[in-house]
Image (tube, rainbow, N blue to C red; front, side):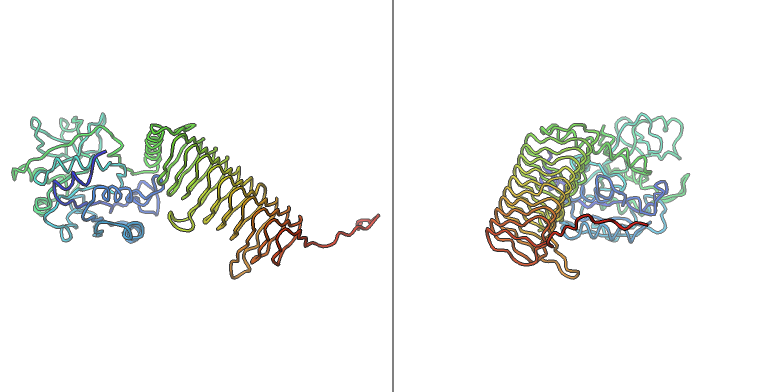
Length: 477
C-alpha cells in the first residue's frame, strides 16, 4: 500500500474541495443526494474519509441544496476527530461546476495543491489520488481520466499527440469529439495559485449557459502550464450516483470488493454476494461467515469464529472460537465505550438471541434462543439458554439462568442492578426485582418473585401456595 504521508510531503500541502451542492432530482427523495448511504455511511462522508487518508490540510465542502442538513451531518461525524480544517461554502444558485469552485476562492490558501472531488463519487481510492497529486507535482494541472466504451455524459479529453489540449463537455462536443473514449472523471489536482487565477477567467458562453470548471484546461494551455492525465482502468473509482438504481449497483460492487479482500485474507464466506459490511470488519484466521450477515460500526472477529446465517452484528468484539448461531442480533454502542459488546472465547450465542449495548460475556457463556442481555456482565460458563431477560445484571461464574426468568431492573424512574453470584441456579419463570443480590451457590425455585437479598447456598422460594378445589365446575351460560 502507498505510504500516503511520505509521498504527500514531497509535493506540498493538499487542500481538498468537495462539490456537494446538487439537488439530486433523480433520487426522488427529500434527503440531499450526498447524504444517502452506501455501506452504512453517507456518500459525502466516504469522500471526506478519503480526504483524511490523504492527510489533507483543509477540506472545503461546497453545499447548496439541503445545505443545512449536509453541513450539520458532516460537522457531527467529522469535526471531533478531524486532523484537518473543515470549511463550508454555499453555492446559491447552482450555475455550474466552475461557479461552484469559485465559491471556495476566499477560503483556499495560495500555497497548496487543490484536489477537486465530487460528493456523489464515493469509492475513489486514496492511493489513486496520491498518484494524481504526484502527477501535479505542484506545477501542473493533473486530470484523472478513464476510457469508457460508452462515455456519454462525460467530458472528452482532447489531445494533440500525448499532450492534453482541452476537455469538451458532451453538449459542446462535435461528432468527432464525441467519438473519443477517454473521459474526464470530474477529479483533478491543481496548484491553488493557478486555480484561483483561472477561475476568475471563466464565462458561461456554452450550450448549457453554465460556468464549466473544465474550461480551466484551455487557460492552462494558453498560460503554458503543462496539463497531464493520469488514466485508470477501475471504473468503480469514478462512478457517480444519481439514482436509487445506481446507488444499489454501487453498493453491491462495494460489498463484493470488500468480500474479495476478506477472502484473500482467508475468511470463508458462504456467498460473497450475500454479505454486507457497513463499517469496519476485522477478522482473524479461520473465520467463517454464512449468508445474509450484516456488520455495522466496528466489529472484530477472533480466530475460528463462526457466524451463522442472517445475523446483524454492530460494534462488538467476539473472542476466538465463539459461535454466533443464525438470526442473532448484536447491537453494541459506540466503540471503545462501556456500551460496546464483548463476547468471550468459546461462547455460544443464539439462535434468535439479542445482545444490547453494554453486554459483556465471558468465556464459554451460553446465550440461547430468545434471550436478551443488556448492560450486563456474565462470567465464565454462565448460561441463559431459553426465553429470558438479563438487564443491568452482574452474573457470576457457572450460573444457570432459567427459562422465562427476568431481572426487573426499572422502577418507572430509575434503573437498578441485580447481582447473581457464582454457581447460582435460577429456576424457570422467576422475577428478580432489582436491586437484589442472589448469594453464591443459591437456588431460586421456579415461579418465584424475589424482592430481597438471599443468603449463599440457600433455596429461596417466593410464590403463592398451591390450592386445589376438587370437582370444580366452570361457569356455564
